[in-house]
Length: 237
Image (tube, rainbow, N blue to C red; front, side):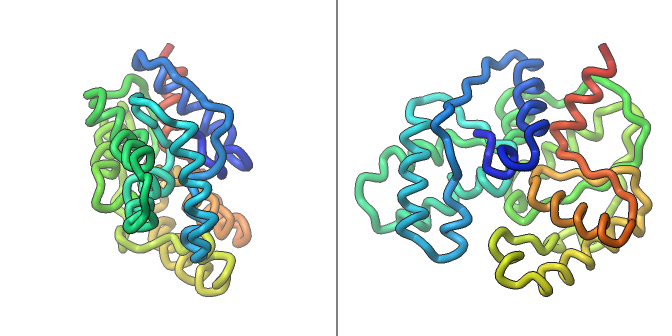
């Protein structure tokens, strides 16, 4: 599942996801009828629309194959948000099936496929942002395992590691000033360590902090972790 942000802003991230999965022996199937996970409507309190979108997604991804999502946020909507949305609903078998088959990308690579080392070299200091939706899951440790196995990579410790980036989906639209102030706290903590690159498993976080940095003329390269994995593997060939 490519996700909306990838479709609109981060096409290369989706491409990198396919390339990385294929490089470890997966056959990637992309259902073209997919739309959104439903989280924007859910977060805004529009539960009827969120339910409609979620049921459509469950139909599109019907079956028994694992559903791989290169976004901690969207993956969490499938296996957590939908459980809240459909708590008292009927005919939820497909919703439950989707929840049980959904994997965040890096969790799948490390804990689903057993990939714990990544070929390549990258001589850079990398700040890894753990997005809110990946906390309490295996994604954070999986990202650290893969990035830490790349020759030359130095993962730098960022202050206030549990600090939200401030994006929060529709929160950033409803409360833009508060969203920006929260993001500034996180960005300052990242920049204090003088990393060469800021990476995450969530595009929304990267877009938010990258936008703040750009407006202040503060240079920091932002990359989705899967783009890093793809690029170092290509460079190693």
